[in-house]
Amino acid sequence: MDGRHALAEGDVVLQAKHYHRSGLSALKSKMKGERKAIDAMGCSRYILATSVSLTPGNKAALAEIIGPALHGPGDIFGPGDLNALLRKHPDIEKAHQKLWAQSTAILKSVIREAIEEADGTPVPAVLAELLPRPQRAASGPSFAPVERDMIFLIKATPLDDEFTLWLGPKLEAEGYRVFSDILTLQPGDRLRRQVNQALQHRAAKVLLVCREATLADRHVQDDLDIALEVATELGDPRFVIPLRLEQVRKVKGLGDTMPVDFVRGWGEGVASLVDALRRQKVPRSAGPTAIHPNWEAFRRRGAIPLVEEAERLTSNWLRVSEAPDVIRYYEGVGAIEGRMLDRAIEQFPYPCALQRSGFITFADQDEIDVAFASAGRFRLKHEIPLLEFVDGGFPKLGIQRQVASNLIVAMIKQAWSAFGKEKGFLEYRYSHAVGFHASADQVRTGQRVPWGRQGDHRSSMLRNVAKGHIWQFGVTAMPFLRPFWHLRLKARVLFSVDNGTPSGLDIDDPKKLHRLRRSICKGWRNKQWHGRMLAFIELMSGEGASLRLRLARDAELVIEAAPMLFTSPVSTALPDLLDAEQEETDDSTLGRPDGDDGVEE
Image 1 (cartoon, rainbow, N blue to C red):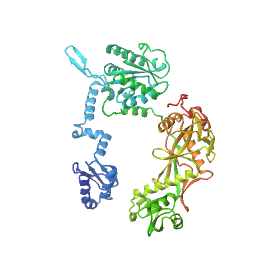
Image 2: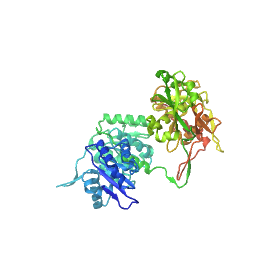
Image 3: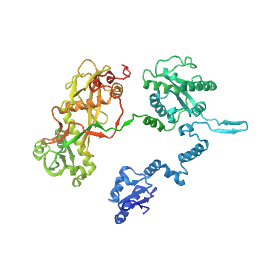
Image 4: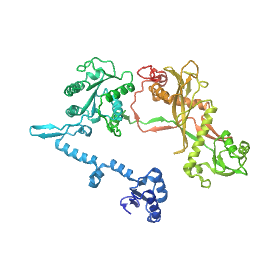
């Protein structure tokens, strides 16, 4: 016993096992030997810490060996878990010298705090790393030479924040070090001196965001003056690179400098910019790329504010309301022709899975006798309660719990596929799943499908034309058995070339389909996605209140056609300028909000 909680209710016991070099097998062997001692302690909770690296599967195996004293795999802590706890509780790390003696982050923190305490003016860490180190010589103070390895972004706040948050991480992903005032997370003028100092000594290139309002900003003008002075000192006429986000007047001091054009599209602009930086040999990291966390921290800080009002939310979850009571295993009697059995299972219209010398299905004996007569005779060997099968597997057939769950999920997927085909939906195989879309036979292009009950009557389109392409809305259904049985619907959008026919010309290029989704669906707001999802469900269910997936002739899975509702304790202060019907016909929902009609090929 290496630790014991003195204040908890009951005895909470901690044991630490090193076994760093011996590995997992030695640790498992040791824990098997200690099982009796653990049970004898009678503790209310047992916690294991080890220096052996562990995967989730390793933890699950150890949990079975340790027994009920362990509340779950989460009470097993490997080195990764321990390091994560230290990162979460830096005060613990700082309080114990052996933990931080070799920690660069803690040493930097200690030194920075001491400097700030002496100076009285805290400097953000991300900026402090860029400042030149002062040194004293006989002639007076000076700055130690440092490498120019930073790309500085000159922009207006908050006008250009969205563009900067988009561009900065993309440049860092290419290996460049990027600095913007966003990274300091300290708005105001009190850090201007340090920012300007870093610009003078560390900038390899300066990127100037060019909008009329940006160029009129006083701070932007000051930073540009400094950048032009540095360009003259370095003798680099291309030191400042303008990024044109709109048509602007000529910028004083830049003459006829060719800007990088972001007007046609940000994606095209960043590609041109990266190419220019490479040709101009701007320093970048040759090792693994890292995105600075302050980009995301700033994004969260400027997120939409919360309102202390409860809000009802419609999910994409469809609850399973009914399922068969049992699942059956049929065993072959006498000689069974393997190929004939495979063919019979393939032709069987309901879910069925081979298992040992027989198969698992929901069908009864009479149905099996008819459907599998060509492959041989099969008799009912086991009739297993379905929930028991999912929760515990079936050891008599060598089926573990996870295998049983996976088997039922696969059967539900098979039943869903048969249901979609029977209803006449268009099937499309994506890279990892199958989606069903409203076909031209079911819904005309531009037709609105009504949906909504209990007074909320609306309509949404499932097929329409945008930018010379027909888009077709659809879904992929993903079965889940926990925390309860349900289907989660994932929205899909498929495209074809509008050639004047109802269905259009199929597109076989996955990359082009991806680009079309990114461009045409960019302006769709939550109301469109939500409405089209409900219209699709309405089309699937018809006049009924449920979807019935056939698992056998006399067995079905009944799924509620109305998505589950959840209640959020808070809501967001989002503008809601258009009502539900206006949202569906608003031009910005049918393509890019900027009105660009071109589709990138």
